[in-house]
Amino acid sequence: MSPARRCGALRAAVAAGAGLSEGPAGSARRGRLLRAPSRLLRLPGGGAVRAASPERAGWTEALRAAVAELRAGAVVAVPTDTLYGLACAASCSAALDAVYRLKGRSHAKPLAVCLGRVADVYRYCCVSVPDGLLRDLLPGPVTLVLERSQELNRDLNPCTPLVGVRIPDHAFIQDLAQMFGEPLALTSANLSSQASSLTVEEFQDLWPQLSLVIDGGPIGDGQSPEYRLGSTVVDLSVPGKFGIIRPGCALESTTAILRQKYGLLPSHGSCS
Image 1: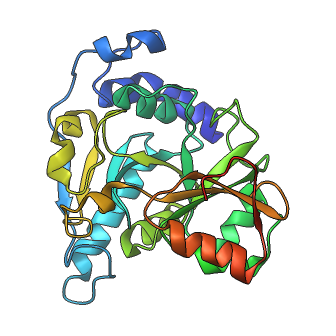
Image 2: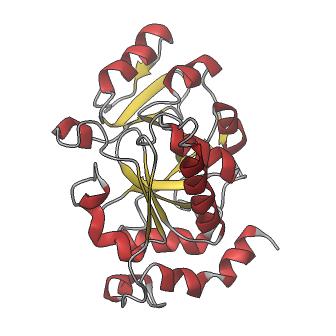
């Protein structure tokens, strides 16, 4: 059975798992909670660095639990190198809907995809920049906006031919993306228009709507405002140019690489 059909069969289950009743997208916020608080797993050592024996068992348990939930069409919370995020299978249209509904997010706002390796970018995007540029920026606290390929689910950001790509510089989510073996849709773990989250406690109101929460400890120092800026989002879809869509937390280092090392020029209207 194809991923799309398999997820279609899970639509009602995902809606229930997200704490929402089935119905028009506009009625999502009025959905009734249908489940108890989610399962929470704490990563040994935090998660930014891969756990070694004897803590490896807990790391593997968290990976397997997250993969199982993702394959079932569920939404899970995960740590990244910038913020806590919500992740689901990008191939599962029902799970994508659940993310939008539980965040109260407009479907006009696209979701990024998280991949496990730089080599995966070539499968899911049409790349027009040097391979070295990709590897200079990824893994890292940046989102690269590229032309999407036909390999991605058509229900993922259907209103744009572009897609933002993340490979966070964070060991756990890299391992998760590699073990899952296909793109993850990724967005911040917070209600739309509210502050982003640096600890799992900061989005505790979403826990009942999630199947699994992975606690990797505080992101950064857990307090400084600059840690809440999220990734730097840069548009690389136009050959020879770049556009900064969101300055984020790595603006200076990112623009330095693009301009000084690769000679790219800022596009008109870019905030770089």
